[in-house]
Length: 519
Image 1 (cartoon, rainbow, N blue to C red):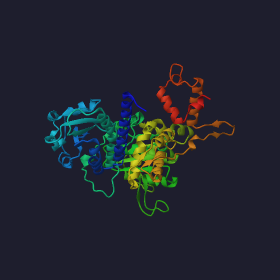
Image 2 (cartoon, rainbow, N blue to C red; image 1 turned 90 degrees about the vertical axis):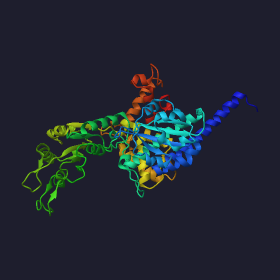
Image 3 (cartoon, rainbow, N blue to C red; image 1 turned 180 degrees about the horizontal axis):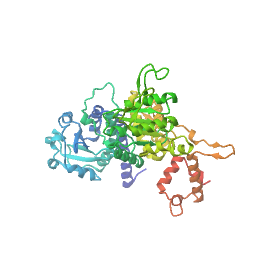
């Protein structure tokens, strides 16, 4: 069978694309396993260099503290050490960041950028052109530089491959920097200086997630941290209220003092007063010595009162006095002790409802509710599931001394379709379980709980459904009413006042298929 020249050209392009994808997959797998700079250096020089046919490879990273770029990595190790403290301020990087395509610079023009002394000795000898690319990232401003020894413009296929490489580099660099900052690698000497380690902007505050609700949380943290204003953190269990309290403390003027935490629901009622205010020797049976309470321990620092809604009503009076008078008395003591403490409280309860029930004092509520911060549930920021899952995979692989793994597309869809009644804590436990159970480099299955889909029946036979089931039923009724039409003037999206893409993503998350509303 013969093929026309047009068909031969099409087959040639298809085979070329397949080879590109195989090459890219190989590169991405190697980079995905990279968890520190030493491994990154090995991958660049042993794999990327031969596969992408460049002579030199370096990465420039913007540091807010230095108001300029620094050389984060160079394939010439000597350059990484020699210029690690050099601050680079050039308008050329703005041009690269704003360009939709990689910027090609011939050898004679490299001097105009002011970078020839950093990017490598090869520019005196073999390098004939350089390619500067923006590495797209929500966390960092990163510029990649590739030096080639061959003349001429890069082929279209080369540019396409470099763009796809930059997407994977964003993930790899994020992993390396997160591990350097938050997860010390045991058994490895730390050759990174303190200035080099702080690449993650302060506004990230150790809180993973780039959704709009979490950006609002970060903004509120930034607004309140520097003051001594009391904060109350609201949200469901497992959303990360303690992380927010820690972020407020560490970005405040009290960051060099202690952050003392107490869970009001975890301590027996008869011991809670002693834990908060301390006691004198002999003040009650078992008080064999004097003990300082959490308020004294947090003097000049921050006291985090978790699950404040569980505090007994009798203790609420004493807590209110301590907050108003800024002084306490130990149990059995006769003198007041002045304390300078910033209070951060947290609860998963509706305190106004608890006031109505008589379980919480209104005056204490108004004393605490000066600056509320609401932490959204995970189902309210489902777009953060992917980055959270990847973050936990990195953490648990390091913790359990395993090679860094990736999550398959199928497993990720399972995560994004789950409603996460246990929020981030449930996701964290699911990922840890998957990391331990998966024998391969790719996690193909992640088990999630399904108890949230249960329905309940009251004594008068009223059926109470979970919110997930209620939302699913409601969307199905609208879709059936619109005869299965999603887009258009008479479609379900228009009736619900939603973008069609949003409706489709909700349908996917809830497992709604055509057969459910067209039958």
